[in-house]
Length: 274
Ligand code: ARG
Image (cartoon, rainbow, N blue to C red):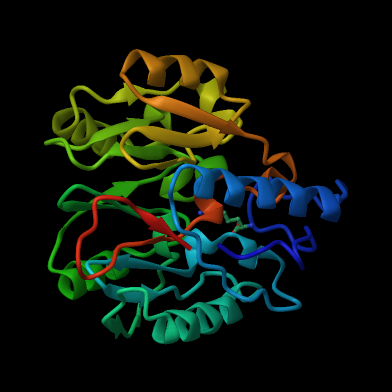
């Protein structure tokens, strides 16, 4: 995770960002600290990267890269405003230890776990707004994983992690939740075929970024505003853990955006987070 020390809305690169709506910096920090403490209270280790002045979106650590089985790939951002974050996350990943054994060189545009969600043994990969299809091929080659390209069509759900949540990667197929209408017809068909038992989110759930979750397979950390989704998760045997990230929502992010999951080379039973 990256503390929101320099978090602010000073440019608009997604429909959630509005230069006219001020950010309460101390509230953002308190909300972020609460998320970190919540992870720790549930037994998850949290590593922290130093925030860089002038990079207000660096708080959205999920976008910094992706780590699977100790192999890491740092992001190459779409917008010039965020591009320097790629180098900062790359340096962190290179120095991290934390079970990271290799760092691939990204040549294609990818925004890390914003668009690359590991679901069991496949990588679900978003495209349409940020991460390119060429990056999907790069990810498949680097990680040796099947990559499923999913096309996003609604600018409010510009990253895959705003429209789809992996709840449990340990089932076969993985247990996921998603907002159907955020995807192209072809991708809707692909999701329906692969995940017939998925939790279908409502527009209300998605509109508060309720799908932007971190799950350890039992606890699902998500915004406290997505009350309908909390109910559906409980029905499916999950334990929703609600947090208030209203200030971070002003940048277009929630729980998952603030969290890059480290999957070290030796596969542990719990997820560690950065
Ligand atoms: N303001 C950031 C952007 O538009 C928000 C990123 C949110 N992160 C995420 N994983 N969806 O790039």
